[in-house]
Length: 408
Image (cartoon, rainbow, N blue to C red; front, side):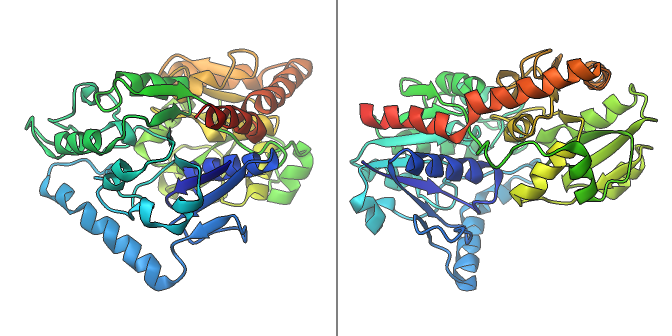
């Protein structure tokens, strides 16, 4: 059984990394798995093929993405959030790897696979949804809008007041491009529920297989050693917060900053990874260390291990891979009881789930974790590590996908 994964973007990115770990898990259990990507990073893995082999290829792909998204610029009142039309990419049925594959497995495909070419796929086809884009008219997270359920139009992210705007056209385009036998997989129960209610996927087979990490790579490091290796010379409790782009609207950093107003921060040290603004951190009036953007697993592992608690204040998240990475390193998590993260954290067992988007309760959760007795805190850490291994390890997800492949 040969499986071909289509993964757009660099494999060091959040969504793509989950797909790559799944690929490795599948190969570990004996599935002949191959990845086709338009990112340059292949990790020297012969089972990964890149369409981007030179600087010229990188420029060509970037220009193609810009051309495909030109219509977005007609909407001058649009929000500055990521938005894609999905019209560009290769005809996957013409690639040699398509010919040798038994099953085609889509992940994040923006700029890699043309939606139009999906109608030509005559092999079993699976699409793992890693955000809301597959079901919307172009946005990656619908936020408070639920028009994806009825076909989009009047898109708030485009600043549109017209029923038949670009978002409605993209939804119609997606409906026409999807083969009847395609199977959809959400990486969280929340995402699968959204998909089942969407106008694009209504009537299609939608199921859930959780996102995954390699728990052997994200393993606990003794806190003192982790802090020394990161140069953290502090005896205070460390609160970790981070994402690829911590300032992104979806990630809710503003809610975290507000929560700190309700926490006595005198005994705390804030540790931050990802793109952030130093001016904003300076205004928090709390001792902090910036680690910058981390793509190296070892550095991430040290950051999670050095912290006493990881705070994930996302407003909307398809899954919450950083939460699982932290738990796998034995560090409890505080998050909101909403979207993808609500299925990851067990309240008062592996961390604390605050009332949705309530910064006061988020602050309560931070102190609840930090004020545990040594034995109580150790129980949180042990339970976090166990849950990550038992529910979210790559091998666990790989076996579930193997069963799905075999059923097709």
